[in-house]
Amino acid sequence: MSVTEIINKHTRDKQFSFEVLPPLKGTGTEKLFADIDKLAVLEPAFINITTHHSEYVYHELPSGQFERLRVRRRPGTIAIAAAIQQRYHIPVQPHVICSGATIEDIEYELIDLQFLGIHDLLLLRGDKAREDSRFTPTPGGHAHTTDLIRQVQRFNDGYFADGTPIKNPGRSFDYGVACYPEKHEEAPNLERDMQYLKEKQDLGAQYAVTQLFFDNQKYFDFVDKARQMGITMPIIPGIKPMAKLSQLTVVPKTFHCDIPEPLAREIVKCKTDEDARQLGIEWTTAQCRELYAHGVKDIHFYTVSAIDSVVEVTRRLL
Image 1 (cartoon, one colour):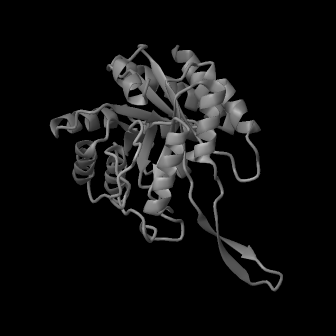
Image 2: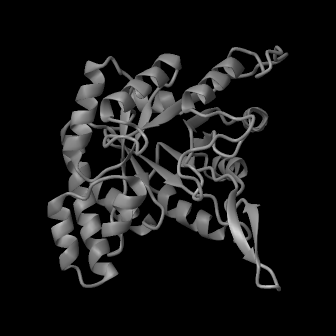
């Protein structure tokens, strides 16, 4: 069953899905699989795997000068997706992104995924490079998610990017996209951002997963506005528990979302990271229960740096 079918059929009243990161280069898979062991017992609807292309780092030379190098810190998204699928028999959904990839690179990713029998994707533009003030597409690559969607649709229709027919097209890819209840950081306003989401749907996107948020009202308002604009595809809330005291300032800056004042007020009272983690579990559990009470059936959890908190929340919800 595809991820799209799982989302639309709602085989359970409460469905969970999880996002995981590939391991850092050279660290092996033991920690990742230990984390997935914890998630697998919760019977997730699917697991998606982030993609991280190369970035610039500065390496100090013996002379004291610095050399700028491009490195890929988390390779292996496709391989990890295949390993999870084979080891756990859980549907997987690797991220396919514009950032750091040429059109040809993406085409080869699609071919590899087909060979491995992986047919669910999350299509994203990807983050801008840390050293750039704005997103700069890779030469020979895509500038927007809509361009990436067109390439995947063309592949689904049986054509490579250069127009050459695919002799044996195989099964088509299903795919979702991202959306932002508090707008994407680069969008001029929420309305324009939602117009881009509508365009993604019209091009073929079958569902959307939100950026993390802590205020459910912003999600409810976003969904209502989306429906008014003709966006009919499922919009899955993306949730992440607060896990450290430092996240009070780091999370809004990194993910461009607000911390509601009641939550911020309670975090300030916390004395230790463990206090903050327990608060995060309580807040997220209440947040998810409110989402379910409003008819939401699928919740997607971002697990990075919060795996044990996510496990505890989902156990409380079952």
